[in-house]
Amino acid sequence: MIDKLLTGLRLVQYFLFSFFLLALTPSTNAQSAFVTRLDLGLGSERKLLVEWLIRQGFETDTLSQPVTETMAQGISTVLGKELFGETYQNREGNIRVRLFTDQANVVQRLQVQMANPAPGEAYNLKSSFRTSGYSTGSEFTNQEDNTHSLLLEKEDRRFTLVESDDGSWLLLNGQMR
Image (cartoon, rainbow, N blue to C red):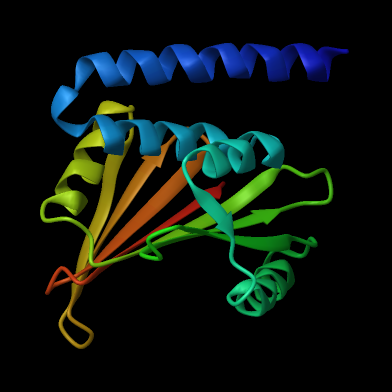
């Protein structure tokens, strides 16, 4: 009973926060909505995030599923608890989302890969995270693989945004602490 009440309250929070962010930052509406969904999706029931992904035009990515399952096994070994992985890809094929859930069907980790993001996408995502209450942790530039990483933290969750120096891809990893 309490779980259902908490889930209901989280849904209300989810929609109010989404509306607030969309009204607050009109220049980055899409990024703000995306960040809000990912933020609230972590630690929530898998079904909520999957339903939102499907409404946004994402479909199950069966070709990448074996890779995701292997990743889930590796993460499970490190964490000492079993996680299950599933992959979704948008219709255009340039965004892939991997969800890693526990036995209770709660999203513990997620990964978003973007190929050929729009110019300014990384900046808009960073701004949206900061607007959502995330603080900037460490930043790191790797000269060897030409990437820039930024750690964003809030309460019990953390996201790492990795972008290629040439802007050809972005990687966003989220996890519960």
